[in-house]
Length: 105
Image 1 (cartoon, rainbow, N blue to C red):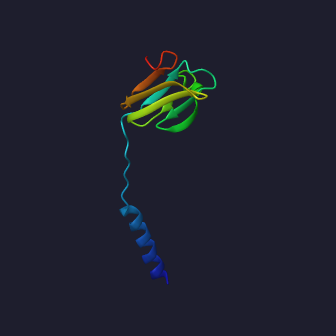
Image 2: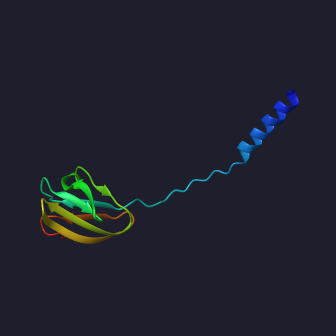
Image 3: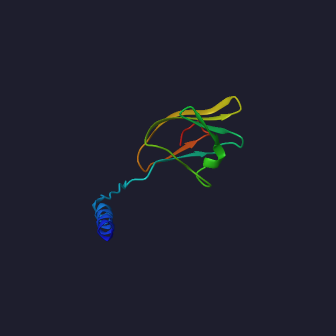
C-alpha cells in the first residue's frame, strides 16, 4: 500500500515537471479607430455590424480597438449616411475619421 502511494506520488510529480510551458506575446498593439465630430445620436457600423453610438469613439473619451486589415466604416444618423469609407489599419496605427468633413482627416 505504501509502495503504491509512493509510486503514484512520483508519477504525478514527474508528470507535472514534464509539461511544457509556452507563452506567445506580440510586440505590437492593435490599431484603433476614432470618429472626430460625430453628432449625437449617430451610429457606427463597422464591416456591416452595428457597433453603437459613434460619439463614444470620439478619440477623447474613447477609441475602438480594431483588427489589422481592411475595414468598411459607416457613420449613420437615422437613415442618412454621414460617412462611408474604406480604411486599411496597420499594427499600432491610430485611424481617425473626421465625420463632419466627409471622412477626411
